Image 1 (cartoon, rainbow, N blue to C red):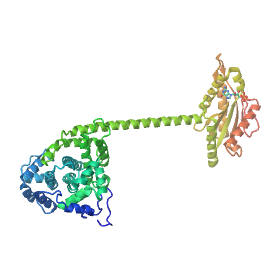
Image 2 (image 1 turned 180 degrees about the horizontal axis):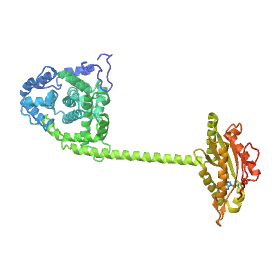
Image 3 (image 1 turned 30 degrees about the horizontal axis):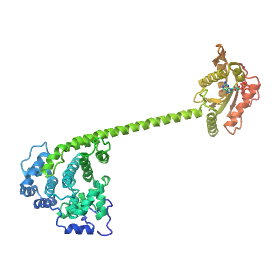
Image 4 (image 1 turned 90 degrees about the vertical axis):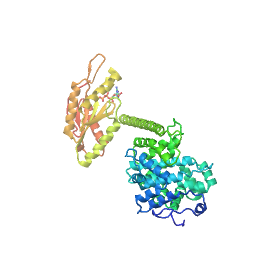
Length: 533
Ligand SMILES: Nc1nc2c(ncn2[C@@H]2O[C@H](COP(=O)(O)OP(=O)(O)OP(=O)(O)O)[C@@H](O)[C@H]2O)c(=O)[nH]1
């Protein structure tokens, strides 16, 4: 191969247009070219191959060649009647059989029949029984997938499925000792390809393409064999069916020997990968594979291939199906657990936010959150020239109340007062506990008049509502001193400045005798409606 020709790193195949002749690494080409034991095709098959490659061939010519071999004719009739067309009217002549099967399937029967008959008994080396069983299952699954995906040439998918690994036959025949060592040192097909690539500079997909070219098979078949190890995502629909069929066949045969209890069999992994890459529902894929169970023994017999002993495709696949469902169930459970955990974390986050922002005794916003919220509204009001006002509330004689009735009842009074405040709150009236027996209400968008009305309403309610009851059931009422300030009352630099102003006004109210509302800036008592505990 010229040094400038790019090679696919997985197969060693030279990348190039469809009709680029397949070339092998020099040393390997020499061995294969000079070896007389290279797999060959019977002359009748060679004639069929030549006819299949010619665009002018008509069915009469095919029929004439096939009818010269009675065994092959019988097999064509058997295949046409049983495998792909079990429900049609039976065909009786070779011509009808070829018409029904089409050129591709006719070619594959001839090839499969011709090649599978050459089984040698050499040990150790390639296990030819298993090789042909794998090839046959590959051919059937490749055909099934192509039909399921509505590909126009399922017959060619069958042929490629059958022939994709013929390079192994050539390597086994021409390098018997080396290949036997390679086969025994690798556990699966992918590892075998990698070992071949390392040993000879290309894998059996390229050798198979070279052999197909050597036999004169149609170029599309040569290309399909060369591409049979490409990843599914990098190929055409037809090639995907072929490339998916090999691993599936391998998993199928291995599944017969795999432990029933294993919950992660090769088959499950392959089915999961295939159903997502080929976009086929897993259950539909399994149903279709089960359908091949009936076809397999007949096809195996027609093509002179031994059907796997004690073969139980349905059992194997149903087991895989059960395990897939168990796998899904496990995943769903994990998903549910994660969902619950996420919900728990969200709840925890909400609880923490609640705790960080709220006062534990009254449930109102706490000082830190009130200050942050007020600062935000303060900035907005300045930026957008909106009104903003604040009421600072301090309950009167609270120490006396605690001393007389006890701290616990003091707590009840604070909770009762919080209830009164809550009734006054709305999206335009915010508030909370500033500390001890001090509370704030503020009105975004509301000016002095609105704040004063709010303070008056609160004062009236405090006068008429008991905040708690003592042990002797007497009603506890409390008055409050309030300072009112609005943004328009001064040049306030921040929310804290505004709070200080309201606090000052509240102290004026305290000094003036409590139970009053004083407006910042008035310098005088604004209202005088005193109530005492
Ligand atoms: N029960 C109870 N009392 C509290 C709480 N927080 C603060 N206090 C009490 O509130 C009282 C406030 O006392 P002062 O600052 O002297 O105010 P006051 O007695 O209301 O007097 P004036 O404000 O001048 O009318 C103190 O005795 C605090 O212990 C609380 O969460 N629960």
